[in-house]
Length: 457
Image 1 (tube, rainbow, N blue to C red):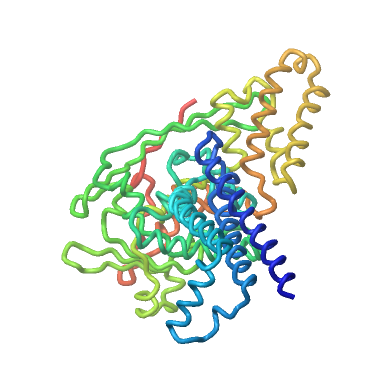
Image 2 (cartoon, helix red, strand yellow):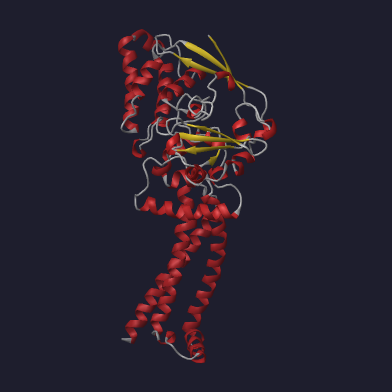
């Protein structure tokens, strides 16, 4: 029996040693060579799977060593006897000394690797690639939108976590729950918005943007194309009264965050607002209510549920912007990536992309069918503009990629955008809806509060 136990012990020791040497060597090889550890899957393998294998190998090694000598050394004995037994296990025999030496050397190596790997793992987990590609299916819509957003070069953690240890720790605890949700396939489809318990924008957004920085007006020109044969272009020029400055001198659109403005959302998406309170310079509060909801709202309900308005209450899609096919096609036509000289381009593109397809491959097939429309309806034009049509179809496939996420149940209508009032209620959640109880006067809905409008061809 003793011979069999020693044979099994040696087998376990050899297995554990092989796992430790192979895994630790592979980690070192990846770290010192040019292997792209920025790749999410290589990073996951290097900083999570391999260190776990090293620990497992060390565990097998310890188990094999104890198994070979029996478990008498772990029995309940007086302290001096336990120390003596430990000495006998570790130093009395050359074979055991070799085992202990290997264990100590491997342990030191593991501590070094875990220290370096832990630091690299923390950095790796803060990359957009980890956020968007490790959980590819779950975050595919958000990551796809992020890559073409105004914040495409800003790491996810800069907005979702920010600086400081406390929010870092909170994010890791939250991330653990999300890992289990992915493993157990219990995550929401789509990912709900807005994010609950997101760090206040004054501690993240305003690191780069802040109301005191803005003043004056901003000019914006947008091009819209009709669905007619000529893809008739219309340019809309907006002069936005951005404003800003501090609370005492706040003006324009950014007055909303420069002032102390509280509001009470009545739904999870914060699209239904029932109450707004504006603090004056002397601390007095001017209140506005939704007349249809006023009787349902108590002071206790308002005090418990109110939020201080900040950047993300209007810029709620500052990065993960799901634009409609019509909007994306207009941009492509304006930039020339879709040829506006092809008759009915916008109309045929929208036919292929609206409503959204059941899969991305199906969306591509629908886009490719646009070629048959031109081949059948305008053979001569098809021959003359074959290259332009091919480029336009590739751009329409890119539009499909940015708008087709059936597995997560996301379309361009899933998450309303509160900047303005074109793809959601936006400004009209309060303006023209909420009113002072005493006077009955509603919050102004006049366009010139925020911008001047001119339209040109």
